[in-house]
Image (spheres, rainbow, N blue to C red):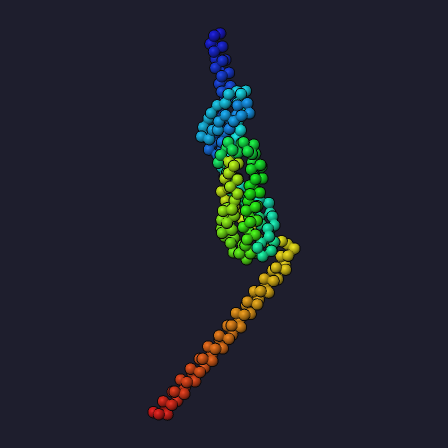
Length: 226
């Protein structure tokens, strides 16, 4: 009978331990709360334990996350509207700040990121012409946006790893007009190059004809002399 009691107690303890075991993986933080207040943060992979009925656990991801910023219109330096489609790579680096200022909410974090990134993008593109923006799509534009990100984002315990532009486009209502203007401008440039080429060709032809004529005259004179 005594052995049965001991075995029952051991089983109950194992069950309680199992129910209160906290498994921590490499891509997450575990916040242990005592009566709602954060007591400790566990970031090392493995198993830890919480006190039953006293402590609760929150999970915060620590891997890099992707936030797709909604398409938005931005006015360029030359007063032209461009549509931007951007995404942000970010991660939590200070879980205590993240929990305190954003209530462990990913949506709250993305809302702050959206505001900070849009303001930086508006500032950068507002100081560039449309042509400069198009030319800077391959990395330069992202670098300038990153350099202007508001440092207040650090107060939320998160880090913006990268801001990348998926698409830069013109608003649909004036896209056709802009394309027509661009075609016209390219046509004028092509016509200029053609005219310059024709002129250069004629100069070369005249020079060649003159040299050939001189050579023939010299050859005839030499033949007559002989």
